[in-house]
Length: 411
Image 1 (tube, one colour):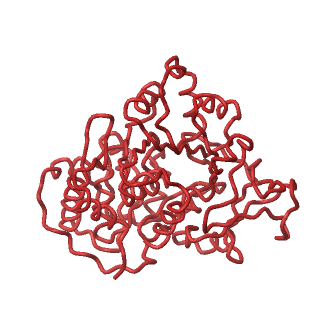
Image 2 (cartoon, helix red, strand yellow):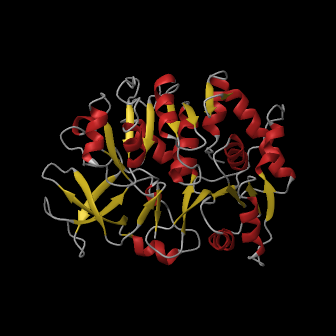
Image 3 (cartoon, one colour):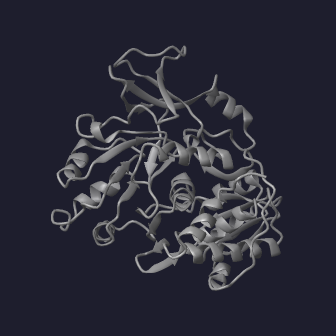
């Protein structure tokens, strides 16, 4: 038996039961005690529906408390959560169903018809289509404790699909071990990620930035996470100021649009301590606009296979080297190499490769693709970077072209 990715939530429910765990859309506040009970009730509901440890469930829907509760409830049973991209078409969703083989799929009202069409086009699938609204009625229940599943550290907890630069999405695996490694790796260097800190998230819950970094990560560390239904620049800017938000991560367009708001000039953003920008190269003009407000936008680097983030520009470099992605983390190393695998000289472009404890242990049912990407212990990112004389890396291009939309990489 091993530690579970849900143990952090249960710990804070005992240690700080009245601390807000989640604030949804600015009004709905849920304490750690109440979230722990609600997800226990969800776990019992999953079990009564026939879900067992190791089986997979799909979730598709807009950001909601029910999305979070359905996912954590499944994880408490030792099941595997498979977030489905809520932008996918029925044919794209059918591929995910065929590949992941979920026993059930939960959808909200906005995505139910599309998910049903996907399942209808997948005759081999026996997945039950269920509604996320089932969990709403469980909110005030007082359930018994959930029996602890027998789990190993390398048991899969999540399969997050990424299109990357291939024509078919690949299912990136996360385990109890790799999840804890990612959380621990950042615990040593980022003091803003402390119990009680206030974090905001405005992008979709369906990718690695959602489930891993903005559900499991903050709840394991005892933060308060403010979820928005979606991104609206003026509203998000107002939330940063009024709620004294301390931690935020996003793609460049979010910060660019907020900086264009009439209220930006007068907004008090002094509470922000850790603001990371990733998903694309951030324009220096955007970084400078926030710097004029006293806020450092720190360029981050990562991809789903690296756990979302594998390097972050240190604060002392964010002014002089705003395009730098840093030099790795405490336990994660980065190199820039030539096609023959030798290290590039300073200012010579090459492929960024990464080794560290949070790198995915594999692709779901795709050992060949993993063997191609993971060679001699180094994950080959497909990104072109340049390392300067001091070892700081900046990303400059892709080996293969992609489109970035809504924070997703699309082939």
